[in-house]
Image (cartoon, rainbow, N blue to C red; front, side):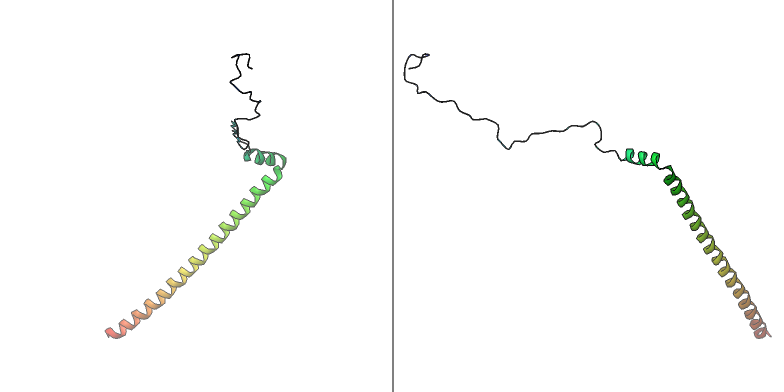
Length: 106
């Protein structure tokens, strides 16, 4: 008999161990205000620790630039030599044509 209703019309129910949240519910959210990995920090640390490598990189860049300029200059020189040869051949050919035309004119 129930003390609340003073009747036995309602059966006794045992306590249940049920949760309303499913077992596989993972509702995790991350919010960051800073980057998780900042690559600039790595490069800055590396440059501070090893300034010689930075200077060596500058020297390597200078060497590559020097090699490039040398090759470009050599190519320009070879082009000039070929242009001079073409002009000399043109002068020889023009003289031959002139002499041939003089023979035809007489």
